[in-house]
Image 1: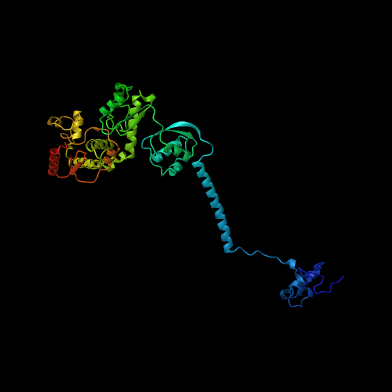
Image 2: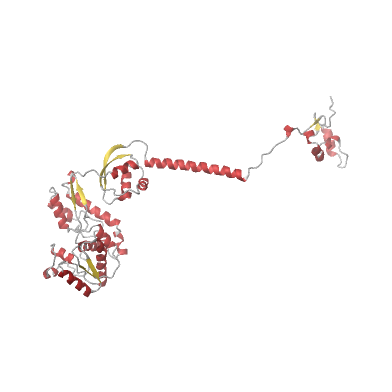
Length: 412
């Protein structure tokens, strides 16, 4: 049956009869001269004819639609969404990790004793508890406790796997009451006086064993030079607890006192003494012991240290009465001419330079003052008030006037 509509019987996509075109006819058209009159079928492929009546060849369902490329804002939204997902994931992971450090999964297990040493501070306490398994992370605990104040040294009962808040609550409650004996060694004592105090306070101590521990060289400070065996000056003045197991262990207590000195001196930078002061660490300790013996007030200690260094730099003898008292082995309020003439390397009125060893057990303040002397040109000082106030001057005549006035007032 024929189709009388224009283009009837033609394939609407290629402009040929639905049944196809004979290959010979197709080849004939292809070989036709370019100036020949177009055949009816050729007109269907003419662009202008297609434009005049597109609907003739293409129905509504024959069009191909292409997606418009994504615009800038759409890309930006997608990128922001991706970044938000990444940031959200990182935040979730970080927050989850932090929560595990602050409060590890599971319940605290068991109770055990942990000793917090004197001077540990928040950083030291956090490190100790992390090493003992009490808290999960020392750095997190330290940051979480940065506002903690007045954390005390002593013994505490902790459990493994505690949260940082639980551990802090234990610390803020204070240490458990000490078991056994406690003994306090004040600043400024001679080694012989420390030994007497230990044997008086701890009757279980054997004086012979204690003396051996103090002098046989088996217990040493890292700041003692080779060849020095005396522990004079390196037993740190502090309060020490001796439990029932240690009440007859002389060496254990002596070792703890030396270790405490090493800890404090290291914290104060005594290894840097040659660069900062021009003295060896041990010489600096000797100077600190003189500061301890000569200055009663904190404000005067850095000035006394400066006088010592100024006199050493000027080649002057130190002329410190405290060293003479150590040389004669007596505590007395005034020195005689005989005392001042004693033939001893500790008599700084006769011999120049520093004494061969410390002359007392310096505390933290005197150790600090020796490391940080106050700037000044003073060469002399004298006691001018009974509360321990010292007067400092570079003028010898002024020193004599102030000394005579203090003596007249009965200060010394």
